[in-house]
Structure formats: structure tokens, C-alpha cells
Amino acid sequence: MLALQQKRAFRPQTVPAYSARKYIEQLQKKYPDYSYREATLNPTNPVDRATAWEADIVNWYRNNNEEKELIGVRSTATGPAMYLSRPIKITNPACLTCHGAPSTAPPTMIDSYGSANGFGWKQGEVVGAQIVTVPMSVPLERAKNTFFVFIGALVVVFLLVAILLNIMLEFVIIRPVKVMSRKASEISMGALNVAELEVSGKDEIAQLGRSFNRMHRSLANAVKMLDETDS
Ligand code: HEC
Image 1 (cartoon, protein in one colour):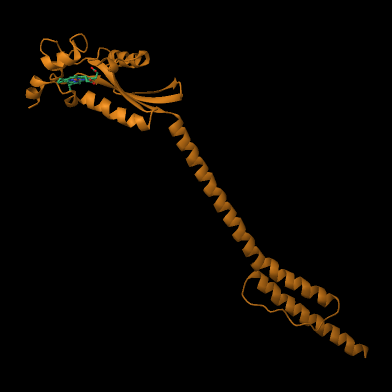
Image 2 (cartoon, helix red, strand yellow; image 1 turned 90 degrees about the vertical axis):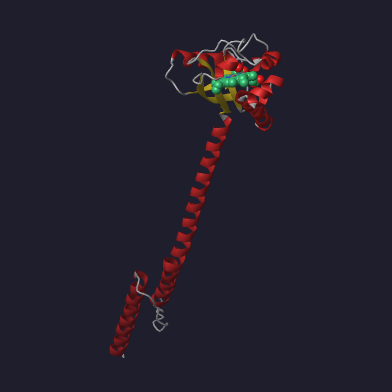
């Protein structure tokens, strides 16, 4: 089917490298700083020719045949960009039908691409590299956002705890102590007949309140006894 089609007219859409490039071109309309390249030293389509820095990566793979991945950062016009690359190695002999010699390639392909480029690839050779480039501003921006969300959440929790603690302090300690201190000043001024404190609960403040009431009563009794002996 494919062979038949190629006899009549070459359909570049059947070539993975072509489809990938066209697809990425669509994506780049929306994300111009992202790129995917099948950078090749001797490409069929000149747009795939490796630029200087891409050629460095391809040659690194050619010199380090076992390496499977190379990641790095390079500076671009729009700031630092991160790249991830993998070698394109000819492992399938079928690739050489179109990339081996012009004489064995589909004539319709030669008609559209010519016979000057993209031939002479060898089995087992690293001919290029797939290179994905992502602007560093994206991960940096994301890291910054995460940082602010985290710090924001921490501040909110901290504030909530502080407010809650203040409310509890107000109701559990400050208010009862204020009442007690008001009563203590009244008693110290001689108002021994004031009503006793209303005490409920079992906590330390309630115990203090009970002790206070006991002291109030003892004081009142003592003063009464003094008065009786006086008279
Ligand atoms: C039917 C013929 C055909 C076969 C088979 C074929 N290719 Fe290609 N290949 C092409 C054409 C045509 C292009 C150029 C596509 C374009 O215009 O983007 C291409 C492009 C490429 C590119 C991009 C660089 C360049 O040359 O422009 C790579 C890499 C590539 N092919 C690798 C392979 C590999 C690996 C295989 C085997 C798995 C393979 N090709 C099989 C025809 C073929």
C-alpha cells in the first residue's frame, strides 16, 4: 500500500520525521519557546540540518556510542533553555531504503527531495539527535508559584492558630482572672459582703476561683469575729 502510493507520488506524511515536525510546528504557534528537533548532520530535508550546538550534541553521541540521553542548559535570546536529547541511531535496515543510496530510494521521493541530501546513512550509525528544548522560565516560574503557595498557606495557618490562641486565652484565662481581680479589689476595699464568684469546671482557673471563695469566706469570718470581740 505504502509502496504503491510512493510509486505515484511521494507522501511525506507517511514519514515519521515529517509528521513530527509538522505537528510540532502547530504546537509552536501556541508555545513558541518550545521546540522539538530531529537534528541531523546529513538530512533529507534541509530544515532538519543540525545547527552548530545541535551538531555538537550529535557528534557527542557519535563519539559516545553507548550514551542514551544528554540533558543540559544553554542560553538563548529569550533566556536560558533546558534541552533533553536522545540519539537517532539507524537500527532498522528498512530505514536505508530511503536513506541509504539514491539508487534504491523511491524515485518519487528523489523527485521531491533530490538526491543530494539525506543519503549514505549506515546501519548502526548515529545520524542525528532528537532534541526537546524548554525555556527555563517555565520551570522557574512554576517553582516560584509553588513557593508562594506554600509560604501563603503557612502564613494563613500561622495567623489562624494565632487568632484561635488569642480567643482561647481571652475566654479561658483573661476574662475569669479579670473578674477575680475586680472582686479582690472590692474585697480589699472592705466590701466583704459581695457575692461569691461563680465557679464552674475543673481547670486550674476554677480551682483558683474556689480557693479565692474560701479565702473570701475565711476573711469575712475573721473580720466578723474581730467585730464581735470589739463590741
Ligand atoms: C519511505 C522513505 C523513508 C523511510 C523508509 C524512512 N525515512 Fe526518514 N525520512 C524520509 C523523508 C522523505 C524525510 C524528510 C521528511 C521531511 O520533509 O521532514 C525523512 C526524514 C528523516 C529524519 C529527519 C532528518 C532528515 O533527514 O530530514 C530522520 C531522523 C529520519 N528520517 C530517520 C529515519 C529512520 C530512523 C528511519 C527508519 C526507522 C527512516 N527515517 C525511514 C524518508 C524515509
